[in-house]
Length: 209
Length: 229
Image 1 (cartoon, rainbow over the protein chains, first blue to last red):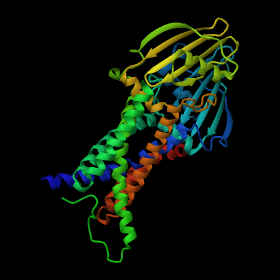
Image 2 (cartoon, one colour; image 1 turned 120 degrees about the horizontal axis):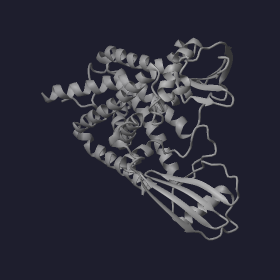
Image 3 (cartoon, rainbow over the protein chains, first blue to last red; image 1 turned 180 degrees about the vertical axis):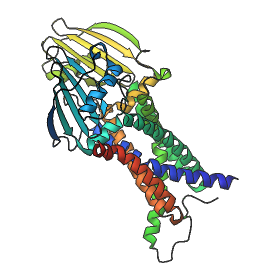
Image 4 (cartoon, each protein chain N blue to C red; image 1 turned 180 degrees about the horizontal axis):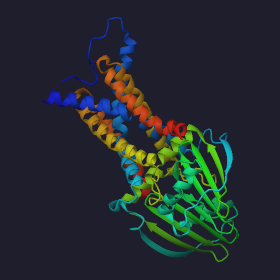
């Protein structure tokens, strides 16, 4: 029984670990960019501008804000050929303009619509793989929960990010079990576990007290 | 019960160099040594990542449950050695007995008025200094354990697209380099796990299928979406 249980846990540890390893790499590699405020490739990001005329705005858009405004403007963006996660929409009253930021990991698009004429200037920046990893690491994030996940793929990314966390927890617990059954490695393991705990709690205490 | 440090499956051919066998053994050992050392860091970043992705979870609400205190203090005049915004901010913090990472949020327009924030996990200080009157107004906000956990996830001392903010507290630097170490450890664990998996011929096919599925779904978001849309 215990042999079968061991083999089951070992196989689940292996296969689930292999499945999430690309996601773990995305989160781990992007840490270096976030911690050092470094985004390789963004300086040389290519940018293209195009103009689309006579874009129809929904009739009641001025009464809307937040997520309902984003949902109402989706058909307009579709017509302009812009897809992605819509960010905070700005209404520049004096300039009579709507500024709509739209993001796909690795691409930033800004749509500026002249309210009176419906003419839109669309600026697209290809920001590259490093920026895509940073965007994914921070998505959906803690800010603007009412407007986030307005694009299906960003909703799906959150499911996958949550699944990665759950699987990491399972893999770490199963890893502890797989280590514990190795009697010869127990003493070294205990020392490392204790050293890790002391480093972690020591730092967390020093930072917060 | 088989040991995870023993080879599993068909025996190694006798001509496998001893060096390679040693590499395999140490790779397996280092895989779980690294995992055990990083365990608490990993749990913190995993749990806090989950909390940050679900800001609507009421039980982990921290900012709305904060405790605030407002107070005023007199400060003594700065000596000639105190120069620049950073020097002045550090001198004010020294006199107030506050330690933490300085956050520049406003542009200074009046030489006598000096506003800045100091942050450390769990504590936020909003400091307004009237240097002409030598009076400091402090608004201190303290958040609960959930708030500490969430801040630890993002406490790097720098912000993308804001070069004004750089690390100025030694503990922020220590924590930031710990984040690097955890990330490097995770990359090592992924690579070492692939090496171990590849050494198990009977598990290669299913492993390749699972790894392929993970890579395809992850690659869709990293590269594929730009290509599709």
